[in-house]
Image (tube, rainbow, N blue to C red):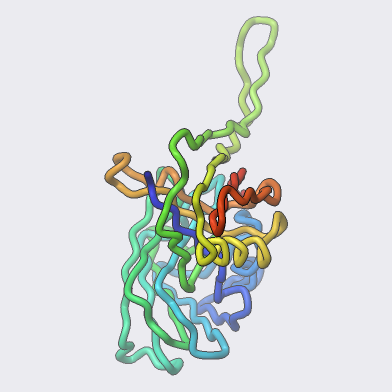
Length: 252
């Protein structure tokens, strides 16, 4: 059984954001827009983005996704945490790797409690660019989907063929979709699920990871920023135990 991790309480949603060398047409406020095509961009090959979460907050993870058509606009990324907005010698530095192929990267680490965070970005381009970022505390259900869960890459590109059999393709991207079932959840696990349902519903995205590298060469294929396609029906299978299914569609 593969594990399921959910990242839903994004501290960035309510944060004050300050980006160095910000390009006005690609403001840092775009990090709080759910559309992945709304990016923040900064001039130069090395930049920072600072966050004030307004209060000391629990942080054990960072998650990034790319712009779905153009990919990542960075070469490297790391995160600093501190109790104040001082970055001379921050107490926490967390590195992060990401997959250009699957458009995601994440890191889970020992929980820290801080008010301020800074992202350090480098790029081989004339600018650095971010699509969507999660910083906060992850939800680990301690269980994973039942066997026979499904994953599909939906092709969004449009292809037309003329009378000579020639194809003309408007290349867009692919969109991941998942159909998973969870069984024998206890009340604590249901509280975690309800936390996601109540805060996100079908209108706000969150982030997920299914499994690890013991189940496939690169499990980041089964990770991303997603929406619930519908609110699941919950079945009480026995006293204090519940089951449900979730249909998830990648945010674009």
